[in-house]
Length: 242
Ligand code: BT5
Image 1 (cartoon, helix red, strand yellow):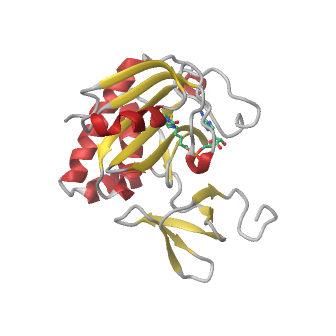
Image 2 (cartoon, rainbow, N blue to C red):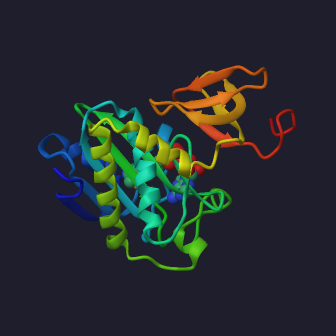
């Protein structure tokens, strides 16, 4: 079933991902939960996602497949959605969508029973951010001074998600990865990656077929990172921020 052919459009909810989990086993794949605002929007690792009115918050219920490329194809679908409106977004591994060096959208994929719950938060018409995140977060409105029709963006996003999900099912992963590379803002930049047990510093050089980040380390060794948290370093390696 096409993504978005069944839609639960809520005014307020704790988290669209949580709501989607409740209806997952009785809903067809492609079902979307969309909310105007979330009272307990979630980021990764139990972090909070600031979700005032004006943003676009949705979760898609999808059949469980190899999930590692879902965040990758979702990032591409978000970028392609906005390029239809003349806005060039960028991608930072693994799940950040960036506009003018700040985070404008985030992706949270959760495996739930036999399904994947794909959560997407896009800061669309948000006019301000709390003090704690205002240096790192921005909205489409703040950067372009234009307000966009939420449902029109939503419909374009569903089409893009559907198209890229079909590509994944048809095993056209190299096309998805190539698009991701084209939108990436991290290649050639020095990054610090937080792993559960340590930090790695290196230069981001590519993403692998499974969506892993490939880093070139100072010693010349190449390291593949399957999951982690990546921050772009402004100072050169060896400087104090490290
Ligand atoms: C993410 O987490 O980027 C995933 C965000 C997914 C949100 C969607 S909304 C619909 C669905 N339902 C949910 O409950 N969640 C999903 P992470 O990489 O952990 O980023 C979270 C961090 O980004 C926070 O710790 C803050 O520092 C920052 N942050 C919080 N709210 C933000 C916002 N609206 N825009 C930009 N940055 C934000």
